[in-house]
Figure (cartoon, rainbow, N blue to C red):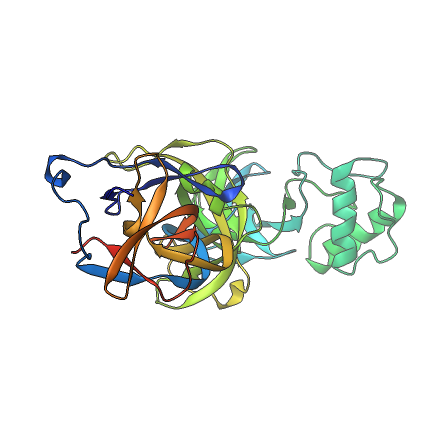
Length: 354
């Protein structure tokens, strides 16, 4: 076998469907390589290793909160109180007050867009009744979307508990719906301001901490929905997390010097109660993709570009060197999985000297 040119860590790999990787380009010998044929032993060698090979990458992200949304006023009047920035509001908690009357939080996906009264029907009625049951004011209410006389009584008990007129009706001037507890990210109005229905009062998020990151499209296979990740927090501690959302559309990155297409990825924490750190502070996410177990691998730089387009390694043993053609598997961690005749863990292969 005629000597070939060593591939000095210039193999280009790209993500392909299914999370695997494939060689897409090889640097060819330049003028400086033409006389550097392997006629003797390489100056540097590395061992063939056997073990697990994990395709992973670390991506910088931002610690924050999920589901940012705006909360609009439900009543006209003067803003007399508002929850402070950074505070968390749970079911039946005060969000803000207009003309001294509190608007409280209830859980539900439907917005509070009308006054609800006896005889009304709809998804908003269903979720109102679910909240009244959860708060202990309507344990006997049916889980349906009809505003019954029993619902009227439950609303009156709720109103009495908060010291407001017991009308048995409820509307945007008394409650606002959100999918769960909310965190006040910022107040868009101040005490003393005049409000009107539909006017933005505050920006809220969920109360759960998340990491938001922009991932290169070439690494998209590593961020499958539900994938387990490790997150390094601003204080240097590390915790586990899960990919909870992956964007469906790629767009250029925010860095003016790097317009590589990226997708938005959200990571939630397995134990959010233990996560601390200032909002918008940096966090690093380690994404692990495919794992190949108990395979042979060599440094990428040990690959040889053979004339027929295949690859090989230069095995060094007993003071002699020989070329062995190999088949390539997964690229990860600066190494490449190989299979070939007579190869085993511990054999040494030539690599470029540094």
